[in-house]
Length: 455
Image 1 (cartoon, rainbow, N blue to C red):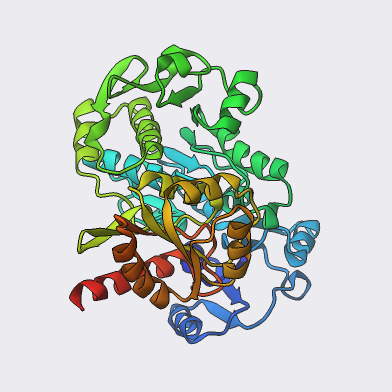
Image 2 (cartoon, rainbow, N blue to C red):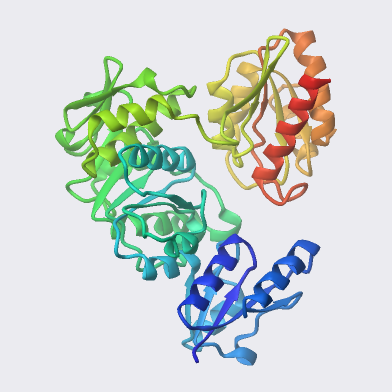
């Protein structure tokens, strides 16, 4: 029996192990952690005949499996994986494994530094409203291998790809590829902007049809140069009208007179979408373009957008307390996303920011803080460094509060004192200093805000 070794016991690792088990493989799953939650997962998988080892590092020399499957959070270039590939042990990511088992249906692949989750959710909502079995997965919703095990199999696979997932999925070839934005992120893992770009570009090169955000400065410059990975029949988008399109304008999607127009056909009025911010108009445009290219009827597109509730942790309205809106933007894990989030809400706002800092350019974010934030409350390990940056640009209305509990309590007081209309959690940071992921950070914020309503 062939032996597969799965690295990482998260949702993706569990799904990969179960799919391989179903396909007749002998499975070992390993994870460096050894928490109570992992122990519970180990017991469950052991009961299913899947061997699990916790608290140890993978060594390809000791195990020599026939296949290695890597969860998205595991760096592709750790020495053990590099050595495994040198030993010519087949090594793939969980998304690649799903692709190998789910090629019977067309895929839509969405990637980008920011905007991909909302765009993915919108696309899935449109396809589902049109009557298709079209689950969203990858960096959103299901793990990819969970979708590969669904019965019946999907009509369309709507996959959100992080750079980590693309890196380990070399043969995935979507019917439609969407690139939402491109700004520096994950450089601690990818080292250079060029590496990060090339990973993203790979998914678009593999896609039969391509959609690019033509308002993104980096991607727009790519389009003007007409350089790889742009194909001649790419669909470029612009919220600024047809005259602003790069590429072939008759193939593009744009907003004019309040309408989202794709390939010169008016599809839906932009104000049908109930999400704030010009960035969400761009997300809407890319989703509508993808649906149109896939042949979805206009009526289904309009119906889906009218009923779209938004995305958890991305400018998610939690509650209104004494006229103050509390908004969860926990998914804003870098400066660019946090800049977009703060720009989208009413001002003045009380901003909660901080966590585990990332490498990136913060100037535009700091400018928006100066324009729109009545006060900034700083949490997590980045608090002192953020305070120093705010001081450097002459912004002094900040407080280091360290924890989410203190931030929510103090935001209530400051919002009343400053007549602020909004309290916004938009961290500009990863969550790993205080939370396992941005979802749990956002859930904690939601819980505290709702307790405030009750209290």
